[in-house]
Image 1: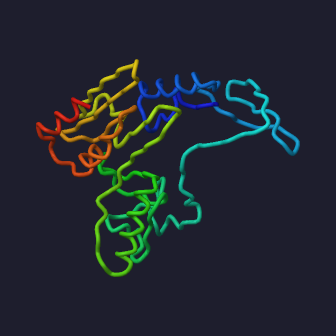
Image 2: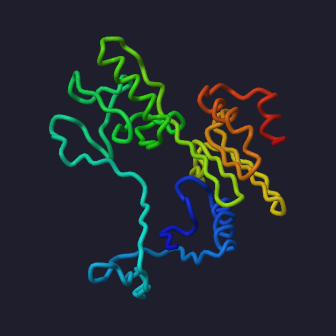
Image 3: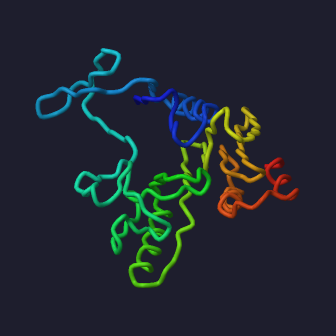
Length: 233
C-alpha cells in the first residue's frame, strides 16, 4: 500500500489517529509505504511494475487507485458560471445563472464550521442538496444550511468516526483537547471555537458520535452538560 501523505486518511484524521490506523494495517500483514506515490505503470496488456516517486520500481500484477473526489467541471462555461474547485452556489444551491442549480459532489457551498466555500463529497450532503435544489427549482424557496464533512469507517477492529475540522490551524482561534488509551485502544479529540464544537475524532467507542454531529450542526454554545459529555467519553 502506497500513501502519498505521512499517514492514512490524512484528510479525515490527525497524526495520532493516523498512526493508530497505520499500525493496525501493518499488524494485519500489509506492507505500507508512506510519503510516496506511483508515477507510472509498465506492462504489456497487463501491468507488471509500478514506477515510484523515489525512483524505485515495484513489481505488481494488479493496481487499485483511490485518490478522493475531484469534480469534473471542464465542460462548464466559466465566463458565465463561477467555478472554483467545484461549481460555486448560493444558499439556494443556485449557480451564477438564475434557474441553473448544482448539487452533490460538484457543488461548492458554505461549510458549516469553516464558514467558507468547501466541497464535502459525501452521500448524506448530496441527498440533502438534491432535495433542496429540487424544491427551489419547483418554486419553493428553501435555504441550505451548509455542508458538514463527516466519515465513519471500520479498519479491521478499529471503528473510526470523524466530523468537521480535525486539524485546526495552530495560530487559529481553536481550542483542542484529546485523550488516548493505547491499550484498549481508544482515542478522542475535540476541536472547539468560541465555545462551540467544530470537529472531533473518535477511535472506537463511537456510539455517541451522532450526538456530537448534532452539536456541530446546531452550532450553539456548549452548556456545562455538553462539556461534561465531551470530557467523559
